[in-house]
Every structure is written in structure tokens, then in C-alpha cells.
Amino acid sequence: MMIFLQDAATQTDNAANTSTELKDSGTLILDQLAGWYNSFISHLPNIGIAILVLVISYFLAKWVSRGVQSLLHNKVSQASVRHLAGKAVAIVVVLTGIFIAMSVLQLDDAVQGIIAGAGISGLVIGLALQGSMSNIISGIILSFRKQVKVGDWIETTDFSGEVIQIQLDKFIIKQADNNMVILPNKTIIDNPLKNFSLTPRMRVVISCGVGYKMDLEFVKKLTIDTLSEKFKQNDGEEIEFFYQEFGDSSINFIVRFWVDAVKNKQNLQAQSDAILAMKKIYDANDINVPFPIRTLEFNNKLQMDGTARKEEE
Image (cartoon, rainbow, N blue to C red; front, side, top):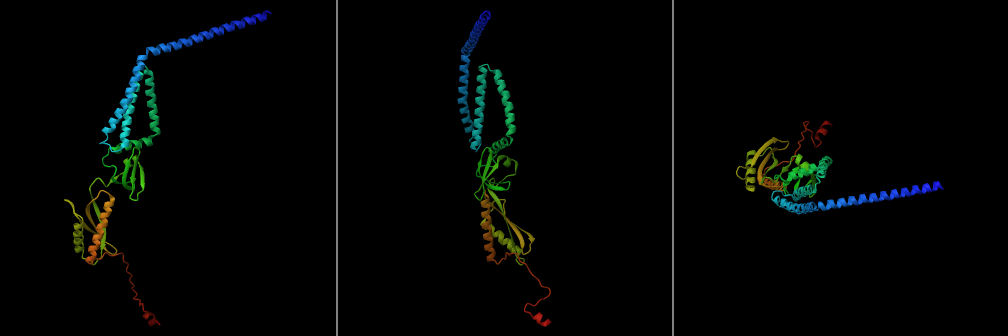
């Protein structure tokens, strides 16, 4: 009976202790909530200022972004680069607003932690996206280069065509066969590039040959006079004619002259027109442009009519 009473008393004491602990825990929670509430009330002006700073930075970022894009409109032809520049400046403005807001809220330790973490994360991301970042940086560089722009006819890395787009990460050209070639911007930066559109005049070179029995001085004068009538040469330009070699069937020469051309198609058209004019004048003056000839010589003086065979019999 005594043991039972002692157990009952022990259970009563434990229940009382548990109730006391629950009351103490509840008091602590209420005190903590009250402290947070008081802290929120005391920092309410700072919170209002921080929110105001964030709102101002947001609208300021949009305004600055549009301003940067408008400023670069006449200097950068690529819309993607202008958009990137505007977004980059907007991000800087927003981040500045966030840091100012956190400083107003006395969160300097958190700001330092965020800056340190952003530096490490940026290094890791930069190493992981090294190739892509290289193309993007190359695209930004290309956007400021006046030597190449949309509409130019270029030749690079065994590809030639008209520049259709210069995007942030790639370079698109349309070849003469209407196929599109997509090249990484880094390839354009790292390799030689021939731009036919940088100069308004282009030199055309045509190779030809005339028979050995032709009057070479007459051929030279006739060719130069014919092309001079067909293609006007500016000051400092002339039609040049050079004999080069004694070929297998002809004496070969080249003729060079200047034409207005900014695309390879115009160069090809000038070559075609020149060849037509030369062929016409050569035919009119009986000038022979021989095709390859092979001469067979029989030193044993064979008789093709069978006479030699009859004499032997």
C-alpha cells in the first residue's frame, strides 16, 4: 500500500514538473515572439526605407537599361549586344539597391557573406562556361568592329557568303548556294577574315592563251583596248597585260583590271563580261585561242595504204 502511494506521489510530482516546463517553454516562445515584434516595430522605419530603396532601384534599372540601349543604338548595330549591355547595367543598379537596403536593415554581415559567395560562384561558373563565355565576349568585340557588319560579303575558314546576323554567341553567313553557315564568334576572332565589302573597287584577273603563230604585240594591244572600252578605270588604275609562259599549246598571259564590286558575284560577272568581249574580238581578228593539242610523230615512215607491206612480200 505504501509503495502504491509513493508511486502515485511520484507521478503527481512528474506531472507538475512537466506542466511547469510547458509553461516555461510557452513563456519563452511568447517572449521570443514579443521580442521579434518589438524589433520589427523598432526597425519598421528602416524596413520602409529599404522597401523604398528596392522600388526606386527597380524603376531606375528599367530607365537606365533603356537609356543605355538608346545610347548604343548608333554605335552598335547588333540588337542582342545592346540588349545585353542594357540588362547588365540594370542588374548592377538592382544589386546596388539590394545592398543599400540590406545595409539600412543593418545586415552588413549578410552582405559580406553574399559578396564572398558570389565571388566564388562566379569563378566556378566562369571556369565551367569558359567556351561559351569566350564566344559571348567575342560577339561583344565583333559588335564594335567596323570592319565587318551585316550585309558584307566575307570569306573565312573556307566559308564565304553574306553576313546575315551577328548574334551574341554566333556568326551567321549565307553562302552563294543559299545555305546558312553558323560559325562561333571565337572562330571569327581567331582566324583571318577577308571582307569584299570594305572597298568599293575590286581587281579582276583573267588567264588566257593564244597560239604560237599569233602576233603577240597585236594581241596585247587589242585586249587592252577592248577591256578599256568595257571597263572604265579610275585615276591610278590601269589595265595590265602580262605574258607568263610558253605553254604546251599556247603562250599564256593574264590581264588585270578594276571594276566596281563589293561582292564576289560582281567579280564573277565582270570576269564573264570580259571573257565574252575578248572572245568576240579574237574571233573577229582571227586570233586563235587553242585547246590542248597532242602531236604524234612516226619516225619509221610507215605507209598507211599498205604499200610497204606489199613491197616486203
